[in-house]
Length: 243
Image (cartoon, rainbow, N blue to C red):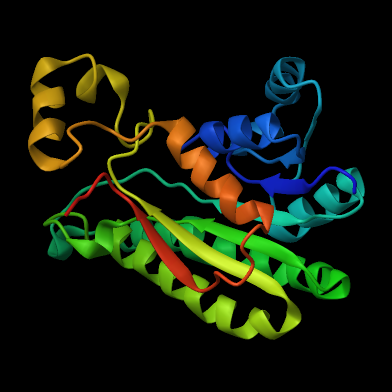
């Protein structure tokens, strides 16, 4: 049997770094997308640090999937790791432009990626799709209506996608993090290096710390591996026991 293959989006942010590390350790052939890879210098720098990875230049979801298939020949797993900055605001002050941009980034994009890859996976009669969403909907916070709404939609989409694709032998699950270390959402200087921020995490998260990229990556790799294909349509909270 050849090496398992995976397409990972937004590899430099959120769940991307830990996912790539886990997949590399498990011997996958990987195709990587990132928003910064429109810059040839960013692509070259990433490729120099990851010499066995196909670094994609495409950004449109259809083109990302097409370039990944061209690079890998076949894709066993899609990891849709979707990101957008949070801009807290009371609902009455929310910018509709920000709402639309967030929906586009974390709901429309995984929807379009799925649309693009479904024919390929159906043609192979196997495959795994993992959506990295968010656990925000478990305990909505004032000021975060936009990411909570958009992420909740993406999580529900994963469930609908799993039901439709199960007869075709395609596994779909969502991983819903909160309190995962990432420079986009829980940066080191505020929540790890700063005693005040670290105490805030200790008080909120039963485990008493942020989740690590490595821990998330190991969970993603389990679902990407197809080792337990009967597990589909699940949302796994990656939250250290919160809320």
